[in-house]
Image 1 (cartoon, helix red, strand yellow):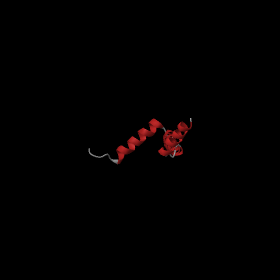
Image 2 (cartoon, one colour):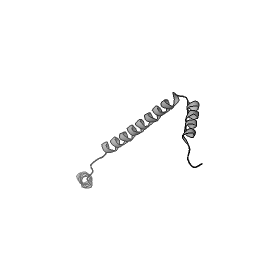
Image 3 (cartoon, helix red, strand yellow):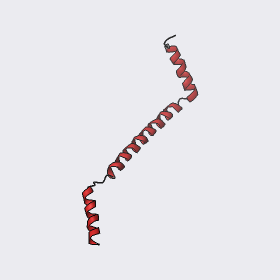
Image 4 (tube, helix red, strand yellow):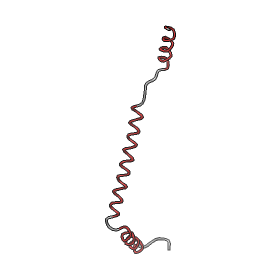
Length: 73
């Protein structure tokens, strides 16, 4: 009773085919593939946004500019 024989697997396959039908399984796999593709696309868009929003910041510049404006007033 430890492992299933080939007959058990054939019966399970027939039951699955009867429940879902022949056309439903490929359609389901296509939907899964589309979901994976859209997930990867979304992840790559997040990476592009994070790299495009990067700003080089040098702390000394902003302090000097604001102190010059204050001294000129």
